[in-house]
Length: 321
Image (tube, rainbow, N blue to C red):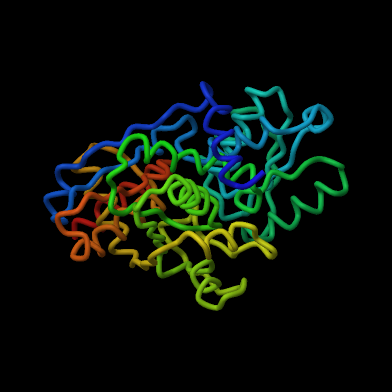
């Protein structure tokens, strides 16, 4: 089955556990940018992130033996939360490997959903490598954050929703980490004949997928600290999402930490919504690109809200100064 075929199947199969999220017009962002700006409210999903889409779809497609054995995954938080929730709904045991950089609130939330938590000393890529090793040793399926067609298909259901909600979108802006979200959404948009431009946005501090796309092969590049911690990290070797991203991304944008903070504050002021840094990345990319899309209809995907309160308050103060 093609990736788009999997997306169509997922669009039906993950309901009603996964709701269709709102697409909301932003008066403040529209005024500031000169564009007709709409926000895809993925941060209002159960667990506060789009990741529930792919997780639900992956566990839905497991066979009986895999359901009985339980699954293993790796995450900085949002993917782990999605898999943990999907495990509860499907009656499947879940073990989540997280790096030491994962926030305490996300780790606590994962455990609160009944998943076993294993902290790995190192980066997200280190935790992914250890999770895959344990998957083979224990004979349990590994639920990849991005490098899996069924997971990517679940994320791609967002693209089907966009076409149903706003078939006249000129562009959609998404933050890019491992590429599963933009790969799935971009595949859906193009397969459905949409003329919407697919714009990938990265924090300047973490551009692994962008560097790989520019190089034409997967490369490892150093990442600095960023507000977009949930999208930071290296691209997994052999990534399926990398190949898909090569095909579906039309434009790329990089944004500074100051631009991310300002975008987060604007969403808080205009919509009264708390969003995490990766969602701010998408909005910042839209604002930076506003001159090219002036007078046109654009959307930014608010991919999550899971941010420490102290961090969010610090960002609000930073963006005001």
